[in-house]
Image (cartoon, rainbow, N blue to C red; front, side):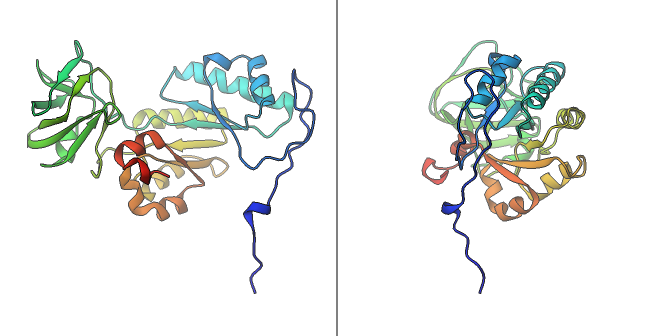
Length: 277
């Protein structure tokens, strides 16, 4: 018969770390790895050594923030520190993906339950309309669809679509501010998972020699297959599960990726909280 494998009995014994500050002095048995997002608070080599001593295994660089030049400098520093330590510390670039957000508002907009509002592309939005960075909103939504704003704190129900305008009635009100996220639960969003900005960041990641690239807004296996054609096989692909529609073909996404990242915040906006675990 087939040999059985009990994951609860499997252990990894990490090697002793070299002495850098308060280094761990004994071998550590640890099942769970730690991914830490790199930022200004630990971008210096001494700060990196301290975080690695504390147990960080993978450094995540968020392509949504900073400039390409700054991110390139950070990744080069990570690699130098990693070489000094001679440890297997992973380097991960997390792509931004398509931006589906509220655009720039002159001032916070008060939304009241029952109020009729209009969404318009940011470049053509007029006074009183809610600008959005997502020009295809009117093409993707339909009557009765819900649009969630600001991590689901505000919600509207679509009542009509005319050309590039979307009219909706406010269900949950409150103050809407600029650049807040928009979630479209149950909607097959037409935006490509890989944007032009992402393609530029992928080229930077390849040049920097990253170990992992995380693709945002994955909805189907083809999203990952498109990215795979751009990168060498040595780079592993991570699918970010943050849309409820990704669950329709989760097995296919798992087959097309090397790992998954559950973006529980965005997923928790589109699903009932208790379904996220």
